[in-house]
Image 1 (tube, one colour):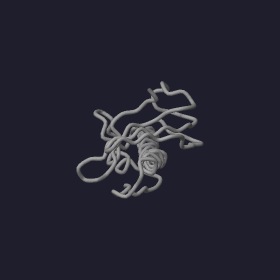
Image 2 (cartoon, rainbow, N blue to C red; image 1 turned 180 degrees about the horizontal axis):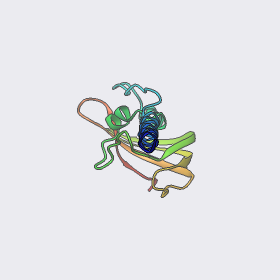
Image 3 (cartoon, rainbow, N blue to C red; image 1 turned 45 degrees about the vertical axis):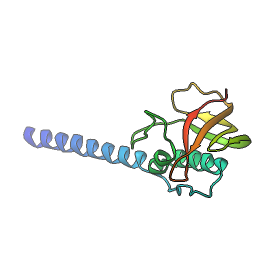
Length: 137
C-alpha cells in the first residue's frame, strides 16, 4: 500500500515535470516565419522585417539581418519587442543607412524607452542590408 502511493506520487511528479518541459518548449518555439529581405529591399523594409522576425520569434531571420557582435538570438532569448511601429526618416549615404522609427517597446533589458529609436545598417558584399548598430544619436 505504501509502495503504491510512493509510485503514484513519483509518477505524478515525473508527469508534471514532463508537461512543464513541453510547455516551455512550445512557448520558446517560433510563432511565424519572416523572409530575409533580398538585395532589392530598402533599409526601411529590412528594419521592418527584423522587427517582425523578433516579434514572431523567427530568430533565424533576425540573426541573418543583425550583424552586431553579441546579438545572436537563441530559442530561449527574450529580446525587446517593438509595437505600434511608425517609420520616420532614413538617411542613406552609399552603403550605409540610419533608419529611425517610433515604437512602444516591451521586454529586453528595459533600457530602451518608448518613442524614437533607430538602427544603423550597412550593405554587405552580398548586396544585403545588415544591422550594424542601434540608437538615435
